[in-house]
Length: 87
Image 1 (tube, rainbow, N blue to C red):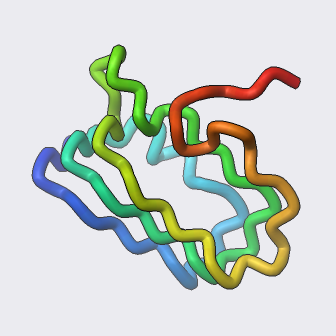
Image 2: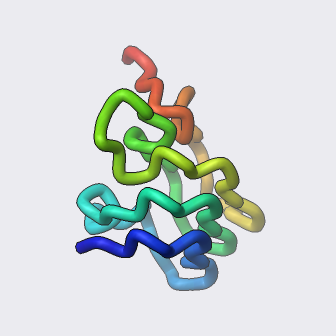
């Protein structure tokens, strides 16, 4: 699905347990801000953000908010930079 002009996406307070898989195929090259606040996520991993070398779904994503996430146990290294940490 393409939303080429979408710059801000607020998914806060949606009872999401993970970053939705649907976002991984969500083409939003202008997206700058993603808000995930107040969701019961235990882990946040968002590997496509900032990958300029790909046609990249989120190459302009520069702000991700994860406030008020009391269940958050793991924020992957490079979760938003496009760098995937080795296990």
